[in-house]
Length: 125
Image (cartoon, rainbow, N blue to C red; front, side, top):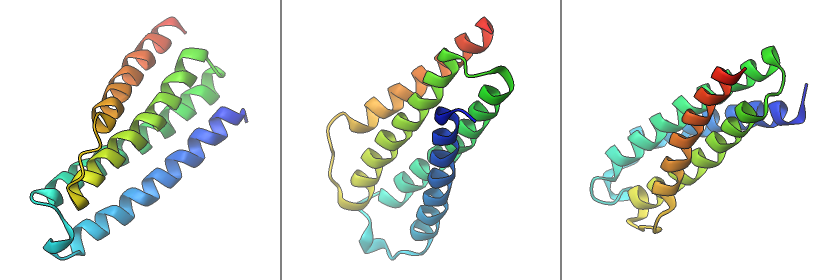
């Protein structure tokens, strides 16, 4: 199995794990642990993380079936980086009210770019 596929599958598993853990914390922590409106914001970030963990697993399976295509590999890696940036930026805002500048929007832009790149990569294969 190519290294990039192993990395992406491991990343996806850890992202799903932390999404489940974050979901439990978001559901059970008292309100004073969140900034104003933070609980809903955290839920949105956790959902986004879980969906992208599943998507990265799908990209990895695609890479195994079709060989390690460059565009698909890059799309998977962009999803990983974008997920980390997006969820970290949203979590900082949700829990501590810290707005870390363009971290979440950069992550979201990387996620959108990854989906476009995946579409191009699949069309070219």
